[in-house]
Length: 346
Image (cartoon, rainbow, N blue to C red; front, side):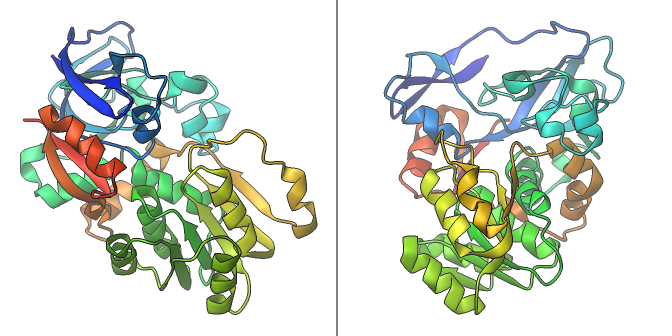
């Protein structure tokens, strides 16, 4: 089968590799029909220490189940499924608490997909984590398929930021990050009843998308100037900040826009190591975040919201490619021509 690999920093290629096979009783083999490039994939793409031939870090897919292990009872060959980037067990304390993104039974990298920018994937721990979609891909419009694909990661991740920050009706919310996750955080904040939603963005196409999804204002400034602008618009500090980038500067921005006693939901994969919580002691901030509870959110709320047409997160896919054009798909995201790159496999 064909699979994307990292050739060197700033270049992705296609190679032929062996098709995956069932290795464990709770495995499923999935023929991928839609995948994509995630903002987090760009960290690997830009890595100067990349080893040539390293498998892609792609982790979002829609597909058709080809084969299942003996212990899989929730899906069968031929089913149309969302393949989340997480692999919760569904029965541990963390999963029962609604935190399957950090399942107790499947710690660390064991709980996260990779190598999904390919024709087939082996989905581990499939019995609870895979999400069956009614019908077949041919039953849906391209726009609906796009929205279904976001349920593998970015829409639940944006929702996770809002959930762990306990966004409530009437809250004033600020979103740091205007990529696909930040755009989905706008949708999530609106779903949960926020009265004002500010997106911090410097890019007109992303600003417009956020406004169409429910943002009420845009702030392009950064640092102290950006914090002052947010406070001017809100007439004070925000109730909630949703951090969707993963840098120390974005965390500082989130902390700065809040009133004392405000709440942060952070879902940007951290690329910093020592941001001390002690620095927030005098502000009484409430801080939560981590990997999204994809299966929980999709099964409980998000799949229905997409199928009913209540939300349209698929709009984050602004450019479409074939698998053989994966290098261009990465390049267009890296150079901010695309908000999120869609890969169609037939």
